[in-house]
Length: 113
Length: 113
Image (cartoon, rainbow over all chains, first blue to last red; front, top):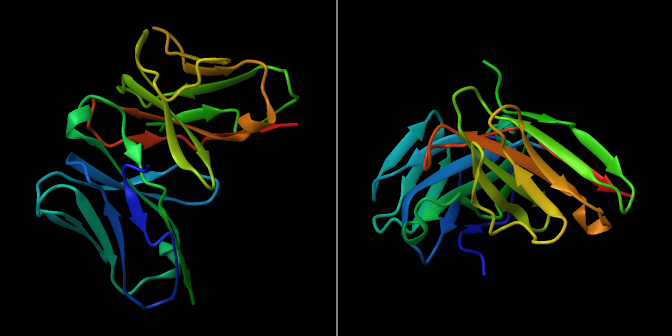
């Protein structure tokens, strides 16, 4: 059983479209992190959300942490080809505090021109 | 300020040989994490180390795999008597403290032939 479920698994869109990807769990997290990974490289941290209900914006990317701190979403406005990549959410459940991050399987985003 | 350095980037080993993967964390980071990534499985946690100590090795197979992070020098992930199933991308990450965003290296791609 995957602790962090990400959906959709694959997403293929045209440049200029909006999209939302989701990260869900039945566990409560003290924080959740989002990473983006490009082929042949390691994941790169985009954002950390800490407070339930928190919304963080990073240019065209909007991250939200659920009120119950069990889920998160990433919304991209007017996608660009440079947004193509694997988006991963990660966290450590509160009952496993002090352990390493657990990662979801990710959403593979392909943006074409 | 160099990021997390992993070497080699690519490693080919014959079945039964040993593989040694090296990771130098970012300056000032004392927490090191090793993950394995396969396309269908996502990023799987293997082991979490601090200087000279293994904090959590629950994700690492008991047989053939070992990890260390000595007082001086890089962290080493060692795989003895490699088998085809060990072929994967191995990523190292570091952080200055727990629950702080990770910085990943570019990975070592191990191929067992």
